[in-house]
Image 1 (cartoon, one colour):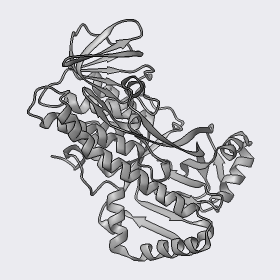
Image 2: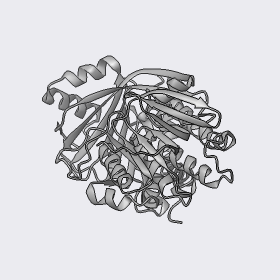
Image 3: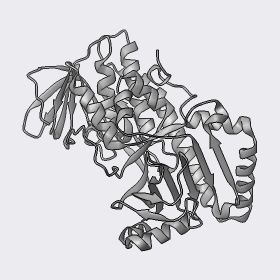
Length: 412
């Protein structure tokens, strides 16, 4: 992929063409303001409309809010036509099944809670849609080398020596963001000393369109995420870094035994049908989401433990909130700092609250203190029986409630 332009100035320069960056580009391109947008990516994917028979190792649990975003930027139909896996239930249980909680979409009069979708499928669909927008130029590959700010303009310097001028730079370039580093924005990092192990498995019993999650005695967390094939799941096994690497190196048969035991054979015997991969788990939060003419979104601004599957959903909300505040501003300057501060006030609190909530849950379920274990197990069982409380939790987790931007609220 290598699209260039002779444009001398852009309204918005987006660095990073992953799911979050591509979503922002598409949302802005469809605005009545007709922004001129540059989308820069150092490692562009191969855009292939033909799906591999094998599932991509990395999948996301897409909430109803994120589904609404995709519907409103007109890509959901194309995503849905390829390969999506709705989940209608969630089942979470603790060590030795002492405490359990079960969520069902029918309890809140909804058809489903979300979808499990391959990351690569989402990214490719978004980029295909971006290609059809006349006001988006692709710079792929485009390796960022520097940021130059002068008066009311800002420029990116690419590796080959060319410069892109604009009014606003958005860093959507992931947890190792170069935009963040070049802008000198500090970041707080909490290393969980864990890795997430991912893979695709075949199960003896059907998954029943249910997302399953078990808190393990070792302090790890094991999730089975339902795929379109009723006997296949994507797994995310969060455990200490050393054990994760050991699990990765096991033979397929030994791994299946370990996996089945850890999952208490809820879906019968399992068989690994893909490679296994691991990635480090860290919580990251930047000190500030914005500087004059610079904004950070998605993993460039924050990362979160995969416990609740909220990572990409938080990033997509960042993208459409930024698009909304830019569209709402009366000032024609899209890099106006007061406008960017409105974006930061809207999103920073929400993402930080999500991080603290997930950390709190993780520590609660990992605690070996007997009084906390008793309270935790009683709390799970009590919440499972307290229908109004459980349904409220479900609505927020599914993206059906909260301070949502217009594009995440459904059709408008």
